[in-house]
Image: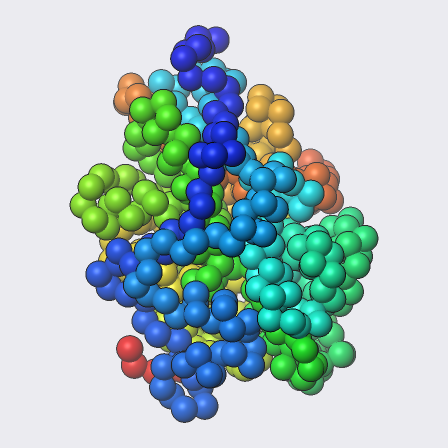
Length: 459
């Protein structure tokens, strides 16, 4: 194996090289994301509309389309220092295994107790809740990474944490559930009998395995009906992509340190938090005309919002209690197949990423479940990290691009986001190894039935 000793396996930044401000990519977007719509009034939401649901400071961040850099509060920065900066790793062993001339790097976000990138936003949202004097927060979680991260963050600030976990993941991933409980959170499988919306969904869809849209509805109802509580979300929202920009800012700083310019940047895409955070500063350069990159979003073929969805206004949740967002969506009633990429099973996509994709600044592709796990296994055997199923979508696309370089002889530089570890996903790996995993893909007819129910909102 030929190693360039000038570029180490792991590129670390010093603490004084860590970003001191989050980057808001909306400031550089000519076409801003369309505003959220209040379903009651049919008009764009205001801060007054959102503050009964979200923390006041987070509402400001959510609606801020113009401020490019928002300072990271000292308490959050000091917490980041516990596990950040995270390493940018040169995948020398994977390159050797693939016999590719491509140079492959991955930003590894699993070096914290939550095992994923989710803690970057969880600690910020918990901080603002504590600063506002709240008792606690409610949230949803898919595979459990977000719920785990938020549980840890709330424990740090002595906040109560109520988590609604998508039922299929609650059953598939009991160990993540127990980590959340260890941090003091209550965890309820969703849809549940504990909320009006949960009971309604169960009545309409008996035996449903749930979805992130269902869990969001329950968490919002629980927040607005409990004094001293607010709802927090781990993906999709503008504020979340803002907090996750630390991933991209660190990645770019590490690459710049060794004068490396990526050709291709790849991230898995469910609601958009990891992808949006990873690409933020690179997309900013692209929007300003300073540089160009090929940016690829990878989503599960079973939940293909970007690649097969409609760019339209839709409800952010199944219970239709949240504002409507203009995004690529499969319809808020869409219940995805119970696959093992739990955090990617959301019916829509971030309004920021949806607008950027619509305007041609990035690409999107899909991967079927068994191919994703093949790539995960291949990566684990040579790089020594068992990746989360969500992250493995990016691994699959990175391997595909590296093999294309092998065919053409091009020495492209590929960077992808390794969002977290898969050590709590061993039930999924077991099903893969036992040949019990399927590759369900929704038909056009199924999707059209959901599209027919989209709200008739222009914008």
